Image 1 (cartoon, rainbow, N blue to C red):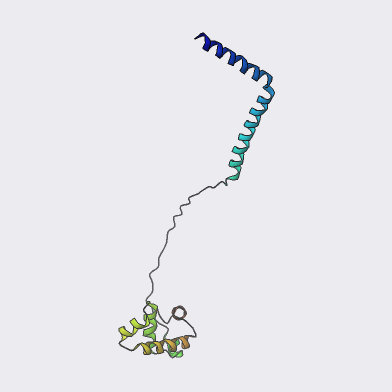
Image 2: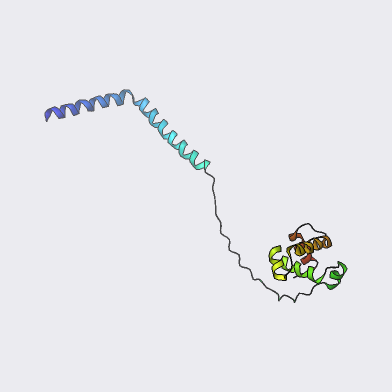
Length: 143
């Protein structure tokens, strides 16, 4: 037991000697450690962008007017010389039906539907089905 106390006492004296002789180096080392950790913490804080999420709730009253009954522009239909069958096909195109489905529904051949499509495209001066639908709705030929 006395040997352990003696060994402890010698280690304590050695530590005291090291601390007193190297106190400046220990102080500088602790100061460097402090500023390094402070620098790392500050860099992490400044490098992360601040993101603020704001939730905005907007309540709005919407008034829906009663839609008027659609009446096609008969004068323009006659002026463009669009037949009843072409108008019927144009309505079916606007419903999203394919040429095959239109042919089955109207009991005509596929080539007849394609011919009517070509005639419609020429009369409406368009290239595609979507353009034909958009222009026909704008000219109030279909609902």
